[in-house]
Structures are given as structure tokens and as C-alpha cells.
Length: 207
Length: 253
Image 1: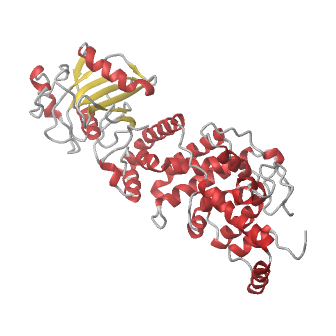
Image 2: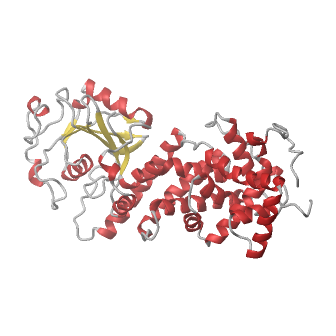
Image 3: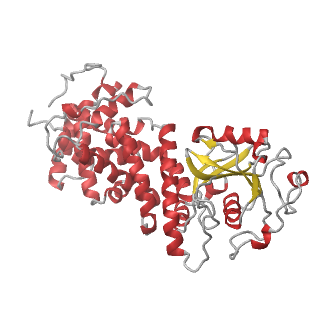
């Protein structure tokens, strides 16, 4: 979609767009979504894994944000607020859809059944596909924290605001998630070519 | 697991500053002497790097379209509520024709002869068409939401069922064929308010009562920033100056 850039509106700050929307400006909210949709999509897709579910979650999120805009109090960045709504929409979807009970944090069981039927058609590089698959091995909370902090570049404090938990909780979820991902992503590291490169079964890793 | 060595969990906690001071000190001391554990520590740093380097996927076009449509529909619903809550006291123009939808094209070139402009602002289209709606401006309505010098224009009824994917070409075809001239009536005050709110004061070149995705809607379009390009809007049948309820916007199509 290249035709959507609206020149004058482009310079309007997010908060102003949101305020205009709350006052009934019919273009303001669509513009806000256009502005941030790729990042919102990235968060939803990586957090949920399945593209169709992610699409549904993102649509839910956009409509929730549309309706909740009047209650936005301006104490956080609009992007923080938007991503919070996206993350919550993803969590709602996951809870509603999950066949198995919610995965308790810190549970070291393997999640073979959760391994998604990827192929993400938007992805031509094998790297991202492996990363996505690996991410799906994590409990939701760890995954969402890593998506925000490591993938989207949020600070721990900002991610804490998005997820509405203390910063220490974000740190801990990130640490748990990285520890779990480290053996799964071992084949991405050219640094380790002296060990079993390309070995799918990572036999060289101490456990 | 070799108790002498560290595991990913401890190292990840160390990296995040989550360890107690004494534990952090002993872990650091071990790292100083153990290359193998330093390797593990580097693995963790690599995890963050690999995640950061994963390409950001663009939102698929169909999804973008779908969300736009959903927002537009929501917009239409909400407009009614907003108008009742926020604009009490402001006079409401009732829907004159509930079944109708209109396409309005603004800007345009000399080719569009079917729009009656009784205003003075158009250096191209106005001359081609005799003013035929001068009476309409007298009833411009109770509220100043409508720019006062806004010229009147006619509403065509082409019978087109506009589709999201073809909106641009459908409008262009209509402008070319001038089919909209077949049936045209002066726009009422509510519709005029709607159009000028949406076009931000530009005079329309085409206003077409029609359907959009099978439903009554007003479609509005104006001359774009580049010559030969058009801005097109689709609005719902309830469109008014205060609540345009835009369903779809095409810029410079």
C-alpha cells in the first residue's frame, strides 16, 4: 500500500492523532494504525506464531484500541499503549484457543505439540523461520517479553509498561527465555563452527 | 551437569543483574577462569543478537485492507454515538435517502462536465456546466460546519457497485465516460456538508449515488496533488459535516 501516505497528517504526533480520533476525526485512527502497523504486526505474529491467529488478534487489537482511545490518558507513549493492546489481544487468543492448559512459567517440559506449522510465507530467509519456531517453544510470557525487548528493541521499563508488570519481572522472563533459546539457536552461531555446525541435535551442548 | 560449571539460567540471570551480590561474585569469578562457561555466556548474548537481527515482517496487504475496512465500519458505528453524546444541541440533518450511496469526486479536470458548480472557485469545470442549483445554497443549513462559499454540486446515480479493490479504476472510468450525467440531482445541505468536510473544502468533480461493497455508501473523490490523479473517499449514507464516517480513502489514485 503505497498510496496511503497522507502528507500533512504525517507530521502530526501520535497523541494528537489519538486526540483527534477521540473528537471524531474519521481519518485519525486509520492514520495511526498505518503508521505503526508493521511493528504491531511483527509483535502479533511473533507472539502468536500462527499467521492467521496473529491476523485475527491484530484486528481485535485495532478495534479495541479504536474503542478505548477516549480512555487513553497520555501517561504513556501511544505506541506503548497500542502494543499493550496488541499483546493483550494475543494473550486472549492464545488462552481461548489453547488446547492445553496455560503453560506455567518455568516449566521445563518440552512443547513439541506446540511446534507451529510455520511456514510463514512472508519469510524468505531460513533464519527467521528458525527463530520463529524456536520462540514458539517458550511459554507465552517469556516469548512476549523477548519479542518486545530483544526483537522490537523496547527498554525493560517500556516493556514492563506494555505488559503491566514490574521491570524485574520482564528481566526475569527475558533471562528465562534466553536461557531456553540458547541451545535451540545454536546453529545460528558461526562463532561455534568448530563444534557441530548444522547438527540438528545439538549433541555438543552441555545440559 | 557438572556442578563446577555454570548453566544458561544462571548466566542469563547474571546478565540481567538478577543474582544476589555474593552469587554474582562467585559466578563472575568462575567465568574468569573457565573458557567453556564464557562460551555459554556468549551464546546468551548471541540469542539477543539473533532475535534483534530477525527481519521485521511487513503486514500482508490483505490484512492491512481487512483492518482498514474493520476500522472504517467501526468508524461508522461510532459516529452515531459520538454525534449524540458530543453534539447535543446541534441540529441533526436527517437522512434523506436511506438506501442511497453517493460517490463524490472532487478536484478533477475540465473533462468533468456533469457537476454543476454554482460557486466561483472553479476555473475549469464551472464553465462547462450551467449553474442549476443556486437555490440550494440558500438552505445551506443551520450550522457553520459547511464552509460558507461552498459551491453546490449535483449528485449522480451511476448505479455502480464500487469494490474496494477496484475503486480507483471504477471512479476513473466513470469520470471518463461521464455516465454520471445520466441522473443527477442537486446535493442537499447535509451531503454538501459531508463532502466539503471530507474534501477539506475542495469542490467535488463527481458525486455518485451508488453502493460500496454492496452496501449504501457515499464515495467522495477530489483531484489529487498530481495532475490526472484523484483523491477518492467512500463514506456511509449517514455522512454529514460532523460525522463523515469515511469507509475508505484513496489518495492520488
